[in-house]
Every structure is written in structure tokens, then in C-alpha cells.
Image (tube, rainbow, N blue to C red):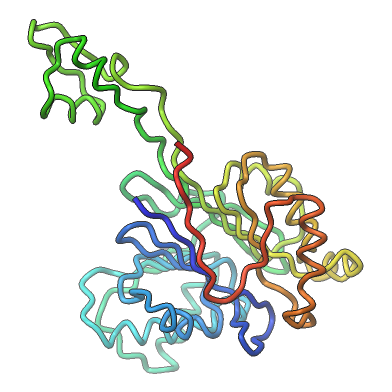
Length: 309
């Protein structure tokens, strides 16, 4: 089962040429989940030829303009196609008011159900087949949440020779064992999944953190992430400004990744517009000095989250 993340916009505060405002799309087989919807989100969706019509849910971190200005356009665009399923929008207080006000003031034509749910983090806000999306509190100038999509553990590897040794013939009974059922062997004895499967295998995890003052408790929320997308807005020399504005410096994002344990890759996002593209290297260098598996996210960059085993 494929799990991919697409950076639709990596900028913070204001868009720049080739740098839309913050937005990330996560694709898990046929399911699409959008995290924030900054200005330019539709442009990247089109350029990547992603099936934006099938977005299941949108998760908004907070209601600052650089994270929600792309949302009204997405809602209106979805009315141009046939859509049978409702679109869910999750976020902190004020997100319902923002959606409703936008619909009223813009006189939106909407021909599908939009279900807005305001979340009080920490909470599991969305559950699907074998996974969930969890919201956790951040510390910004207004209520702000991070999100983590976590998959259930998978059954252990199936060992056919063990099944044969216990008298279970190849066929449907093997599938039932792999699905966690106890079956009867040819001699009538019970064979449980524990008899033929290895230890459970981990699922995958995607975490999204922006905007926030650094505080160490975030690390436990993003532990074991296959991909952590985290703001790294400033360099170390501007730490005082980061603290004043309740944002993170790049080295602090890397500190979270290192302290969390089990994080496989950190992708920095939400850069200050003070940095031209060629100047972002300072953020990368400072982060890699703490957590080597760090990359600078760029608009329309794609990440694949693979199973470890």
C-alpha cells in the first residue's frame, strides 16, 4: 500500500516566486488528506496532476491567513465536478466560522456536503481502515495543532512451511491465518496465527508540525515518524525573533527530530520570506548539524514512505 507526501507549498507569511504558502498532501492508496491550504495550493495540485477531486479530509493547523487562504478556492473548485462523498474539514476553534463566512460572503455554489469539525487537541480526529489521524497542541500566537497520521501495526510475516508442518493446506485457510483467525488443520487440531506468523510489523507514520514555539514535549508526539514535516522558519542567529513570534528555528526542528527517537527523515517547511532560495542553505546546514537526515522541502517535492519490514 503506497503512502506518499507531496509538498504543495513550503513558504510562510507571504508567497514568493516558486514558493507557495504552506500546504502538504498525503496520499494513502485511494485516500487523499490535505494538511493546511495556503495560497497557491490549487496551482501545485494542478501541476502535479493529483486527483484533488478525491480529497477525503483537510486538516488545518490554525486560522492564520498563510495556512487557510487557499481553502475557499478548493471548496468552490470541488463543486465543478461530481462528488458523492462529503468533504471533512478539521481544525481548531474559528475554522467553522471561517468556512461558513467564506461560503456566505463569496456566495459559493456548493453541491456536496462539507462537514466541519472543530477539534480540541489532543484528540483522534479521523479514523480510517487501519489508520488514524491524531491532533496535538502546539504553542503559537493563536490556537494551533500539529497532526500525525499513524497506521496500525501489521501482522507478522507468514511462514508457509510452519503452516504445512501443522497440517494446514495451501489455500483459503492460509489467508485466514494471515488475517488473524485461528483455523482447523486437517486432523482437527487448532492452528493459531501465532503458530505461523512472525512478530507484528510496524505501520508507517507521518507527522506535520507548524507553526509553533519550540517546546520539548512535541518530540513525544512525532516519535517514530517515517517523515516529519516541521517548520524551520529562521536561522540560529534569529532565535530571539523566532521566540518572539512563536516560531521555530531550523536547528530546533532538528532537535525535535533527534530527541523524538525513530524519526527517519525531517523535511523543513514554512520558511521566512526573508530567505531567497539560495539562502535557505543556512537553515539546512544548521539542522543537519543536529539531525543529519534533514532535507529542505520545496514546492512539488514528493516523498515516499516505505514499510521498514
